[in-house]
Image (cartoon, rainbow, N blue to C red; front, side, top):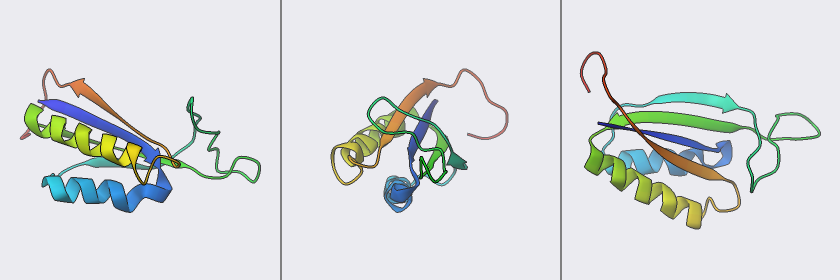
Length: 100
């Protein structure tokens, strides 16, 4: 099993949710509002000086599905979400409780 963690500008929420729907991913956990700064994007601190915020979500899926998601998020990064910011990470899941 693999965990896919995606951090993205809230302005591309619909595109990110679309990737999950198209991939048939039924479960995820989301953090709806995050603050921070990346190397290629300005600060998003949800203030008048640094407006905007990010969101993050994670899902745990089989490795093949994780690779599919990574490719789809890379496509977003190279396409419509290029200006807004999106980054996906693939992490190993060594163990978990309950159903996958």
